[in-house]
Image 1 (cartoon, rainbow, N blue to C red):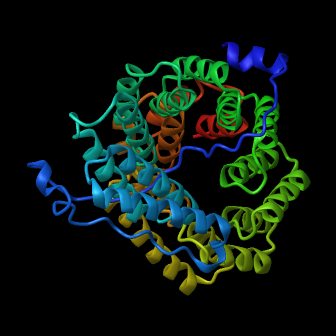
Image 2: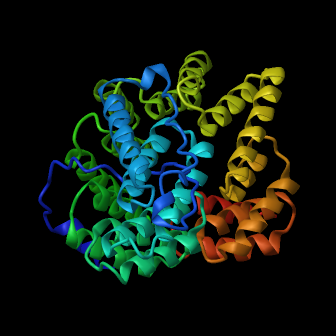
Length: 420
């Protein structure tokens, strides 16, 4: 696997990349098209750009609003302008990632991109390519990985030299368990554009294959190649911090999270990461303060799950039950907006509410969709063990170990199964 070995040995030129990661968004444009004379009247609605939380405003937010308004003006003149629809999709894709308002943005992003793709007579190849690419990105975020792969492969017929497209295919193939193809796509991606996005995917591929040191090296390159203060640079540093924690380099991880906050004030994921570190250290007071601070910025379900865990550990069951109820509403909202949350439900029921039967039910649903994915099989091994299905757990564990048989977590699970 060339990308996992040779790229560690060759020097890749580092770049200051200002391009933004593909991120998800939303826009709902409802219109029909019968004849050119009625174009303007047929644009019935363009949903508003949601206001950001006050702690996330600033120059970047001003730029986002300006881009939004610019496209709105053009769409009012010509509702069939696919290029402007795609520009609006880009704006909302960014906002979804920054604000966490997925339930508002995901379905709407699909709507506007579908509307663009229906304009066959007015859409050029470049616009069709980007509409397919962005819809594939939305499908990835919705955990509809097979659909994302099909859309990306359709886009590949139009343009075979776009790094972002190969990154989308990397993600889709990883999630579907086709790891060899994922590596090939990542090799292609980095050969076209060695930047923050390609380095990040190299890092993840190394990590899941058990090369933690190599994963850290690649993610350090990703973080260094990003422009300080941009969201995608903050995301790369956040992921780097998580890798440091996995490698028992907690001081480096904390430094990484604090650097993010120096460059991008009030970045909620970094605040929550520091809160999770305090939770792991049993520093409950500081952990609660940080996690609540993050949750008050954006409605990210992961923050609520960590808070529920904290309240369970500190035996504050009234607050625990309150958070569990909120989490269930949030998860259902995601499902209602088209997001496949089977694995998230399984993890929630297994580790937070300890409802083993429900955890098994959701894990089984996801296994039926992605039977060769290593993470899905790891979850199946865990829930089968908790439900007394030991033989079944062993079979899933074998599948989970296909990528990294030396994983400490999987070996511990193997030992536990052997003792039952």
